[in-house]
Each structure stands twice: as C-alpha cells, then as structure tokens.
Image (cartoon, rainbow, N blue to C red; front, side, top):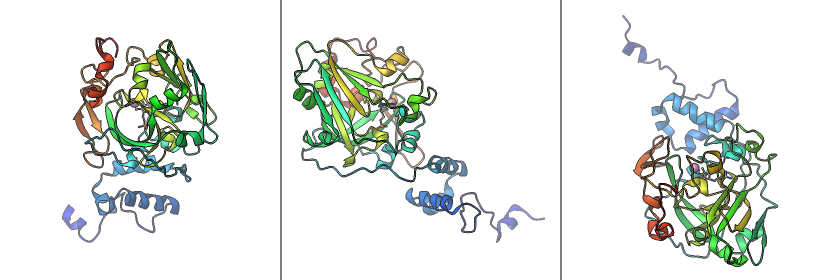
Length: 344
Ligand SMILES: Nc1nc2c(c(=O)[nH]1)N[C@H]1C(S)=C(S)[C@@H](COP(=O)(O)O)O[C@H]1N2
Ligand SMILES: [Mo]
C-alpha cells in the first residue's frame, strides 16, 4: 500500500510558492513575484512561509504602481538634537504601512494610491495672529530653514509604533519667522483638500467618514516646544506622498493622528481649533492625545504597542508604551495640573 512517504519520494508536489518558469501566468506577474521574494530577502526561506501569508503579500503588491513618486536626496547641516537609543524602523515599512485616509483606510492604500500625488506647485500659508503672514512655496520648504535629521518614535493610537528618521526643522523656527502676536493661544493645521487627487475625500466610505480637509491643532506652548517638528523628508530624502509630502507635522509625544500630513495652511488663533478625529469620535479621541499607557482607548488597552518591523518578518514585537511616548523629560511640564484622564 502506498503511504505518504512513498508518494513524496521522487514526485514532489509543487507548492503554491514554488514558482516555475513555465507557469501559466503573465510574465509581469511572475517577475513581480520573484522580485518581491528577492526584495524581501526570502530566497529559499520563502518556502517556509505559509501560502496564505505569501498570498496576502502578493495581493498588497499586486496593484503596485508602475511609477513610484520621485523623491530626492536632502542636504542637512544641523546636528541631530534628540538622540534615541532605539533601532530605526526599516524604510520600506515606514513607506508601506501608513495611515493617510485621504488615500484609503487600509495600511497599504496610501502607498498604492498616492504615487501620482502632485506636490509642485505647493503653497503653505501661515496666517492668523501673526505679525507677518507667510506664503511658502515648495522650494522654500527645504531651503528657508536649516534642516536637521530627527529620529523620533511614532506611536499610533491603534497601538502600533515605528521609529522614523525624519528630516526637517522645528515648528518654533517657522512660527518665530511669522511673529506670534500676544493674543495667540493655539495653532491650527490643515491638509490639502483636493478630491481629484485624494479618492478618500471623494468617497466617504474610502475616507473613513472623516470630514475633510483633515485638520489638527496644538496649544501655542506645545507648538513652541523644541520637539514639535515640521518634516520635509525621511531617511535622508524628501517625503514620499504616503508619509505626507511635501511637509507634515511630527509631534512625537502625542498619538500619530496629531501629526497631520501634506499641510497647506496654518493659522495662529486665540481659541482651540477643531480637530478631525475629535470631531469624528470625541469620546475616543481628545484634543490633547498625549501618549498615555494609563488611559485606555474605550475599545482597547494603550498599555503596550506592536513595534512594526521588529521581532521578525511577519510578527512584531510587543513593547510597553511609555508615558508621553518616552518624551516626558521634555514635555511633562506642559501638562502640570491638568487631569490627563479628562483631557485625553
Ligand atoms: N492628513 C492626514 N494626516 C494624517 C493622517 C490622515 O489620515 N490624514 N493619519 C494620521 C495617523 S492616524 C498617523 S498614525 C500618522 C501616520 O504617519 P505615517 O503614515 O507617516 O507613519 O499620520 C497622521 N496624519
Ligand atoms: Mo494613527
């Protein structure tokens, strides 16, 4: 009687992942798959990865745009001011696992849908309670301020995290150039509104129900804190669209949704501005949104986070979440006497 072992001798059943040259698939797909396996460094290891994982992988690369958005190398002169002991998240994780609902709500949607995004021309206006309203064009964003590399932790409210080497300049240096008037208490930020380019703004379901344009805000003290950063690049190059090209805010002690992308307008105000996630679900997302392991989201714990890209290819290491994302030494003073359970 033929048992399993007899069968497996000599005749090897082709596994779904054993791509062979005469396979009946369009050549492009075949090449794509081979490149993906190669790019991921899977090689022979590929054979040990379950088929469904590979299927998922290939799905997310299947509609990979032919022409990726062109970034360029940035020169930066300033020394890094906040040194992190952390390991940087690999670039391909930072640029392929994104939240940018204007391009869809799945993590790979922004990479897949944003490659044709136009950033030239771009206009960033700084207005409101300032002595000198500013209008910056695309070139200004990378030339007007001395650029610095800043590696920061990014902690999403969904309990995953990354470590990103941004390039940019402090928000304070920009605000100082505009000149803040004495009545000012807050700064509001606004993302580009362009439904032609941003399918999530055209289709309510695709855009996650957010009322666009995406808006965010900080208190003036938060905005002037040296950690608050305007990023124009990452990993030494200008930002790709999925990460908020050509300029985005980065506030590393707050949940990621505060770090608004693709900014066209900033307004210095004398009251707290509305913010997108707070408007959508005020009991879940506050104005402050400081990273706080002691205050859970109504639907999940904030005590720990999944570190994207750590702990192997298809799993992530879970690590404890730190108060203010570990930046307490620099920002805790901003919240003295404030009940952080109430002002979440
Ligand atoms: N305009 C805009 N900005 C945005 C978002 C968005 O959907 N639209 N998502 C936010 C969220 S929830 C996170 S976690 C970070 C993610 O930044 P990254 O994709 O560069 O990691 O961007 C934030 N900025
Ligand atoms: Mo997020």
